[in-house]
Structure formats: C-alpha cells, structure tokens
Image (cartoon, rainbow, N blue to C red; front, side):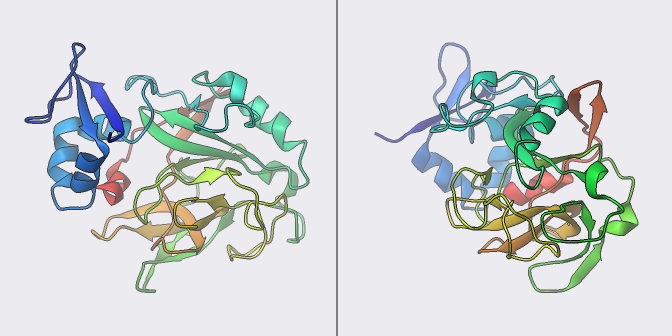
Length: 276
C-alpha cells in the first residue's frame, strides 16, 4: 500500500479524498506525480506554501500561525537525537549552545518546524571565533560569492550584511529542503567524514560539520553564506553547496531572537519556489 501524507486541515485539492477533519490524503505515487511535473505549481497553489509543506512532513507539524521554531525529531532518531525529549517544543538558543559546548567545533544543530515548514537550525560560534585568525576547527559565518548552477556569478553575501536571513546571534535557520529533489537534508543524521565534528574554512567539501542529504548525498556548509538563485531566476540568501548533485544550497530563513526563542520572519518567501 502506498504511504500517505496528510495535508493541512481544510486544504482543497480538487478530486482528492479527505477525512472527517477535512484533511486531504495524497498517496506517495500521487505526490511523486505532482512533485516531478509542471502540475506542482498548481498543486502547491491550491494548498498554499504551508499546506504543501505539510504533506512532505509527518503528521502533526507546527501550526501555521506559530512563528516560533520548534524541535522536530526525525523518524528513526527518537532515541538518538540530543533533543529527542523536546519534540514539538519551542527551540531554545541556550539549549543549542549547551549542546555545542560538548563538541570540538562548538557547533550543534537540530531539525525543526517553523510555520509548518521544515527547518534545520545550526549554532555557529561567531561570538567565540570572530576576530580570531582563520583556522581549522574555528568555525564562523563566512560571507561568500555565490554562483548559479551554470557557474555564473549571482552576487556576494557581503552586500546583504545585516539582513535578518544572515546568521546572527550565533544561529542560522536553514530551509529543510534540498534544492536537488526537495528531499530533507539533516544535521548528523548519519556519521561520515562530511558530518564529523571538525571544520575547515572556505565552504569546500573538505572537513565535517556539513548538512547531509541521505537521499542523494548532497552536502551543504551552514557556515558558508552566499547569494543563490533558483532555476526560475529568483535570488535568495542561502548556504553553499559543498558537493553532490544539488545545483545550489538551500535558503536561509530570516529570523529574530526574542529572549531565548528563535522566531522566524515572513518578510520574504519567494525562495520557496525551488520546491515547486
């Protein structure tokens, strides 16, 4: 039997069966058909960005009106993720920092959900390493020149310094979708050289501390910030692809820190189109 995904309540996708609560059921074959053809834009428009995102996630994601980032424990990591006991609870900056202090690089990460969309939040120790000589295992945010899938220069992240999408307060919030086929990359979902507790500067494929997509092995450096561009020509601030089949890196989501809470902003959402 095909695996089913549940969309947001009251979403209306013409002709699709729904349950008593008004949730539309789309089986995996239907999703792949919509997801891999030009019909996706119509399908996504009928659901809205949040509704479309919820069919890509397990049931029970965060509410559309809640802009605080919450932990979301990936399936299979219920016993291994350091935040396993905090599933669907508000993510705290202090908790990420405490976990980072247990590592060599002083980095940590967690899967989350924001406004119904999957995110990966990474603690980057800018406050510790900024102003120190660049060297191995001294990670910090690097503002870099971005190129599109053809190698054409798109822009430089330094031109956007101060933008709320640029990592700040030692935190980066990354859209949890791979630009390759919109799979879900993760922070230390697997153990290999790309996810190891070490760091090398330059946004290259060397060193660890990468986001790793287990579907097709794309790797992304959460510390290497650049201007990216979708196949539709929409520019966004994102992180660098270090290796693998993805054309570019995923988007960075603008956010504010309110007390100890990470609160996403909805100023600019056009980057979401790379999963249409």
